Image (cartoon, rainbow, N blue to C red; front, top):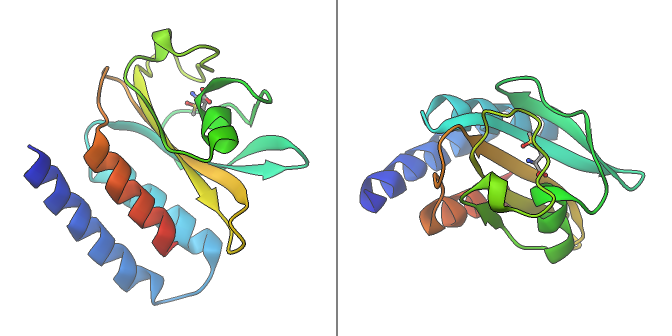
Length: 150
Ligand code: SME
């Protein structure tokens, strides 16, 4: 299972590297990563980016159902990833204190913080599943790698 998952991520990383060579435009990279991660995994019900703007987390490109435009400060999984500077895996959103439910079908999620070149956290990659317990250490490892390449 993990070997299969690793292979799938390796293919995605290879594909992204080829696509990223076409342009340096960061928005193009974010949109392309979003599309690939959404369409290559059945478990991914929502894939998108939130970036910090004037102290708020504001949604950027995403794929999936309509999302919250902004996220209340210091609440939920995305802000936890920002504040801890660490990837957060939420196996059961109902058990995560302060979880923000943009869509009630979301049951588990993984949030990866995004550092700038000086190491300051500027946003997050957020991926939601409509099934509980969808994300593991393999997802963490490869999603962090993908963030590095963007
Ligand atoms: N669940 C997130 C909010 C973003 S949506 O899942 C798209 C959170 O608790 O921060």
